[in-house]
Image (cartoon, rainbow, N blue to C red; front, side, top):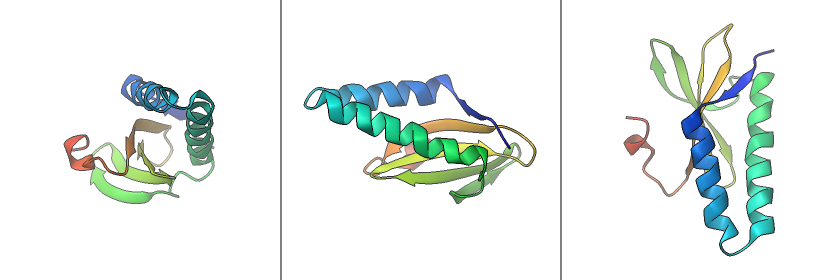
Length: 98
């Protein structure tokens, strides 16, 4: 079982998502963030569940979907799963994962 580790940037993305949604609906913001975090937890047991976005020397960058959001993470056999960011589906992910 791998450990799921969030980068500081990924945590910032979560805060930004929360703050944006909370402007109109604080309870919905809390539910969305909890859902994203819960979805990411499955990576501890199933790190290959997401779509392979591309291969890097450090491992595979993969994308796991949660509603309108994409959870980008780095995975290599025998290592921790590193959450790189959480992106709304409307964003051009290439700008953030060049």
